[in-house]
Image 1: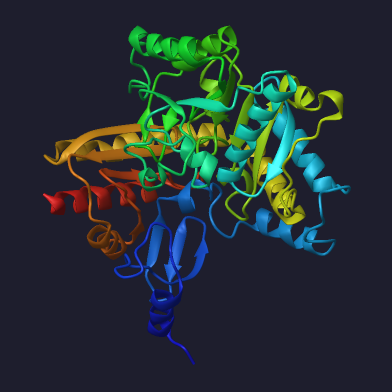
Image 2: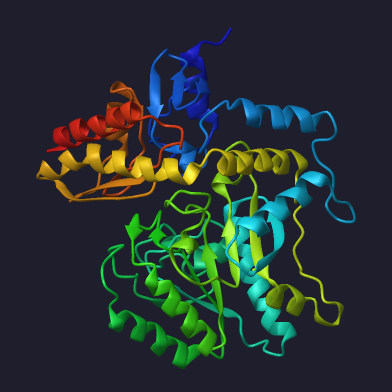
Length: 427
């Protein structure tokens, strides 16, 4: 019979984890079970989770309402093809998404993952312009420091220099980039940034199908917060130069920034919006691309069909648990809880500012970021956090928290204390 060490050794031999070397893998810890905001390892340690499993498990682990939704659905059917067939969980999910999304987003295309939802949005934009007599509109503009996923079209609109995908530059479509939005949620707008975007649009609008951006927070590209009013101005420029606006809300959707969607911090609606991650409360992989009537009906002109159809599109189990997750969001006043979490993060992370190796601290909604002056070594820092009873996974210069929304102030304090202690040890 295999013990914990046997499984860890097999993991090293057989499994290739994300962003990990097979010859010198970062440490991986065997999970036995998880409940609420706690993850219990096979070795007995219980860790307070500060990551929401890459920002998706917003209601915590092993939630009874989400568990029950899966149990109820599986007795009917787990999956049925979405070509020619439909089902209540998918219809109910689309209805809810349209009701809570920014005004004007009226059509829903379901897919497998966040990255694929971006692929879908880019394909929709290109196909829309093709049906409207502009087949030359095949390219996209975007900001630097963005991250939109690991599939090929999504990689092409990620930061080409400081992002993770420079290795593939010669294989990717060459897109058009402007600088990253100037940082500071409340910092006044910099007119020169908007001028840079307009200059690019003037030069290339004839070939640009869309402009894609993560609204308010650039996540994996550096946890950068910026003034939402830039989005109002970008919307106006997109309208002026006949370019579709795409919001990537995969990380920010469903309350993470203190609003249902980051788009709700501004006064406009995109033409397309991608959601994923927290859509199912972190239970199953599911994403959606929402669009307006202009795009959906434009693609459908002259009996046109959108050329995408995942095998597991509209998976009934995933749609059922997504419906349960959205019910929890709406019935539990999650937005108020997220704003409370923002206060706790500000309170308990603030003393990290006294450390000489800390560059800055910033919090928005249920996002807390401690930016260091130099990058961390994941091999060294990850075990230190486990020793302190927390699960935090830094990257680059950033030690950050994106906890489940059910977290308590005491758990936030424990996570923050661990960050302070570990950052102190780094010198």
